[in-house]
Amino acid sequence: MNSQEAKKLQQKGVQTLKKYISGKNCVIAGISGGPDSTFLLHLLKQIPCKVVIAHVNHEIRGKESDSDEKFVKKLSEKFHIHFHCKKIDTPALSKKTKKGIEETARKIRYDFFEELAKKHKAKYILTAHQADDNIETILFNFTRGATLKGISGISELEMFDGKKTPLLRPLLIFSKKQITDYMNFKKIKFCIDKTNENIRYKRNLIRKKVIPNLKLINSGLIETVAKNSQNLREILDYLQQSATEWISENTLNEELTKFNTKTFSTLPIALQKAILIEIYKNFVGNLTGLEVVHLDEVLKIINQNIGNKKKKLVEAVVTIKNNIFHIS
Image (cartoon, rainbow, N blue to C red; front, top):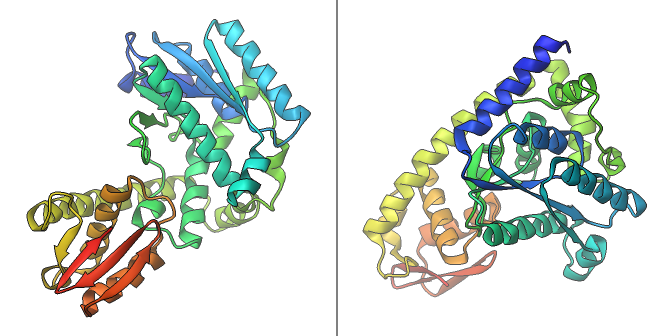
């Protein structure tokens, strides 16, 4: 990378931030100390707004985790930015809740970010996800059988399940290589998380083994996936809008949980799934754990319309009785 390329990269990042953020806004920035989040912080320093740094010490890497915390704290002092840190034994909590470390860590982070957003009345929560993260997410979700939303990738701006503060990801326009090349050219220090090399974590396996081989097939993989992701999100937006309208027009109660099976069964399968997802989201408040296999199982009993049937749908139950299906 040369000085001209670095300047263009920086300007592009600042322009993206300025689309959303003005001088009166407060934002919560999730900063781990890695190259991506440190790059994000350097971009934010060029925007006239209030920045609050949120750092989580997951206590996964012992002294290295503590070292990352100290690094981010020093950055906050250098830039005169508010710093908040949550320190928690993530492996122990993972074991206690019987959930994976990655899933547990993710929940800890976003709960903490939302807590700070409420406290500081922030307009956005910012994370440093970049284009390579988008590919990882799509491939990870695709292999585990996620819904259309899961395989459509990461959006630049969206509401996170169950949260009230919009989530902004301004670095999705950059690849990992662009960011690290910029950081190295500018000689900006950042932390290295050695657990990112451990392929026993599923996302690392995708990052280290799967994506490099896919790039041998298509060297423009990042651009191709970004375009496909956009196409899928456009389809998803249409289905969500159609589903919302159908629910509003056909609900049999104010809670939006009771519907006529015969009317529902005449719809195309793609719309049925979109409707079921929206009903579930309205009832539960999030889509955590909901996969295509769950939708298929429930749609099977709804479309068969056999009375006195019940089917568990992750955190809810769908009941069929007297040509009515009801989620509770």
